[in-house]
Length: 265
Image 1: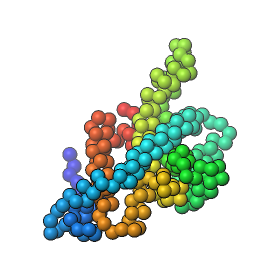
Image 2: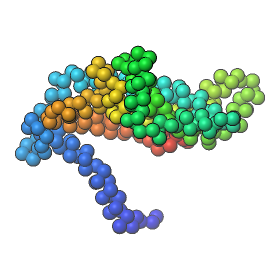
Image 3: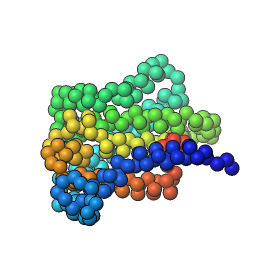
Image 4: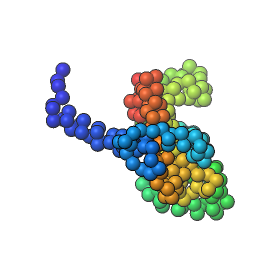
């Protein structure tokens, strides 16, 4: 077995430290006992973690973001499955146009999308509603689901489906029993990435969300704009820990490489 060159190993360690340093600083700031942002070198405290329990507006925004992200990811997945299958398995006039249209939110700045969606939702009377915000988030996360589903469907062996048809199975049965299980890693990976992007979305949500539909990122942004206490740091640390636990569970029982690559074994 070849050994990793020392210089490359040092580079990898340095890069990892560079990426993790901001997270460590946020965690340290969250444990200060002061009423302003400061590193707790003179003593750690859980004061700002206890403060989360007395901030119902942040807790409500958290659950609102969870529900919104799950809704947007699910709707995007339901739209991306037939679209991805059609694009990956069939050749039809306008195929590249449809693909470019569905992936276009990746190329448009979120500020532009936010202003455009705000005007559109205002025109249809949905600018301050949760379902309007869900539609906006679905537009944002759809390309992520579509790309992984196309990646999973591209390597699909079509002879398996043809064998099912030859044995008398209906198109719906072939899809549920053969096609969907084989592209499921792409579907699951797309849903997960869509959920994370929706939960973390700020730029577009600032334009579309209202005082009654604030998501957690918007709530944290508005809090930072008016105060300097470390409450946001403690909330961020809780989210980091929750994300790490989720990643470990997914990697242990399914494998993050399979989910994020969108490929089955």
